Length: 568
Image (cartoon, rainbow, N blue to C red; front, top):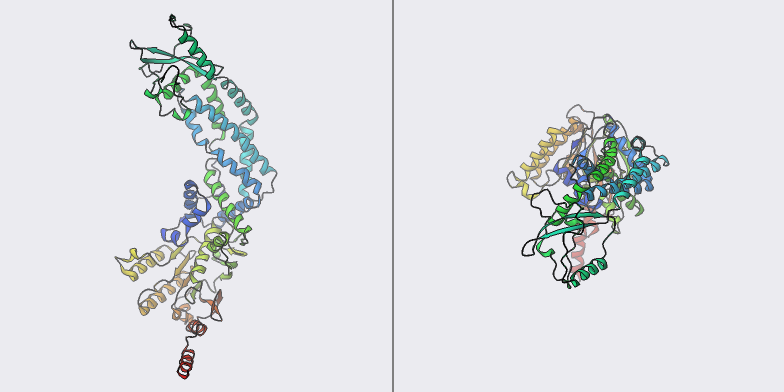
């Protein structure tokens, strides 16, 4: 059976573009991963998968439908979460099947018990899927897979085998050790005398010891039962290994140190006991391995590849469900052909704002709409400081990122043609500008973006070229916008350079293109930042006038105040 995936349709090329470090940082991927799980393994898995962005509409829709089913069916999620806890042990089953007959009987018995639980879990998944209203191609294929495992593995017979074998091995309750002493009565050799079906009790051991020590004139000739085989390790030393601290401290005041299974790898006594017991129980171990092999040979590894995928879907479903309960809105994205290079969203907001609301912050999330199509695929976005330009720009990148991984998106409606990559150009850390200077560093990163971007890419420029000389920055910025216009990529360039958006005709007529440039502004309402975005020409100095008027620092207001002060 071909390797099954909940992220890639069967027999479909597994092609993706890896987001660069700048994009991962600018979109705050690590922050999201830290919110999704406290486990380092989960965070690493999710981060890696978020970074590997597919762009084929068929693949994206496959993922969207799978996630929709998982989010809709909480009982299925609960059952799958239980499966994840059990499925990890499959990674070691093949190793146990190949091990020599000296494999630890304790480990093998433990694996059989886990396998028994796994059978129950797979059966539960099969029953849940069979009785759930699943629509996605991915979960329907998963149902076929677990049905195949269930039928072809002979689960009923396998459970009977496990029950019988575990029952047989569970009769082993204790072992009897024989210790040989040196001329100075120091223990020099120890071996297993017998394996017993009853456990020793402390009372029984002590009473036997007291009884023996009371007969001071009696020295037993031979051993208790000479017919019993005396088993020692194959290491050649004849010593099972008695650490110094394990000796009897005193006939009446102490007992031999008790060692547990966790000491088996590090303690010489336990390690060598394991070897001897395993050697004595070769027939039992062969029987155990035969039972394990029945499963491993059929389909043991067909589910291992699902661990990271299921982890990804379950963690995101849990977070989005929590945010929805907190009043944050999400929608299932509608995926259209990647060749159309379009994007439309209503009620969109930055996902990070939703996390703040989940954390209990009293914030009012302002939503917006945006439309990318041939008439306006490139937006020059202007507005006041702290007016929401960066938040909006990042929000666009996050919607593409989430949608293309199959997740619900922070909006009330979303229609999206997948992008083949996301490129971001946000202000860099000061340490990165030491060698090239700010302008040189920014120009270098822009050059790297255009070396890889295509007309299907998403380009997000956040205050690019704003820290250099205004005339120099404006000169380069115009060329950058003309290049995006010529390329035809979807793009947002948010900037304080209002002049950049003053003459759109010049930019749109620079080269033939099917992607025009338009102007977006973030709004001011009576001197207050509204964070609403609208399709409109840049307002230039009007923002400053509104703010100045609100705080009483226009020339007229200042003059009036000074005149009143002089009259007093």
